[in-house]
Length: 193
Image 1 (spheres, helix red, strand yellow):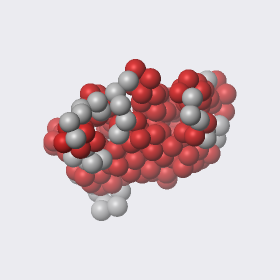
Image 2: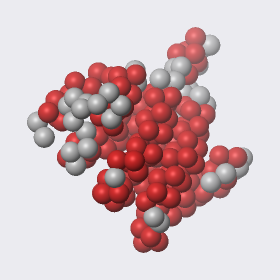
Image 3: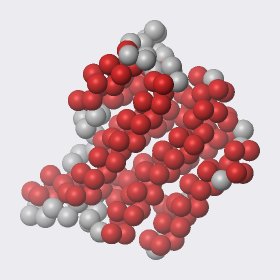
Image 4: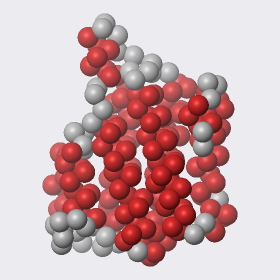
């Protein structure tokens, strides 16, 4: 996992990110007990990918950075989508142990001081496309997971308790500058389920 972040050679980072993601998706990944899976993803992989995304969004818009950005987003979302049914079946504690860190990372990324605005003030806009494309990709992945959680009856239009997963999710989305305009639409989808 550390090679995904600390290595100075981009191809090594790309390979490490790809291998790490694939390790959760292959047949052996299904043998990992759900609590350990959630711990590994929620405490190591998702925060690691989030930190790297923040760094990449502040850098130049290059093909290598775009590839790495997509690999980091894949590390955040692909294992969750792949194992979501098993995680939901394990219980709410397992899901929250993974979902809460994911929402925290997404809040950090999607509320990040806009590196493109800073770059434009300095006469450059190299990171503009990278920030915009990463926001679009992250929003789409988040939307997809939220819709699946609605389908599984995990998320409701309104929380039943002030600290349940629905309250946590809608509160986090409301705090994400890039996503909050979709909050009512997503709640409405939950109310029709």
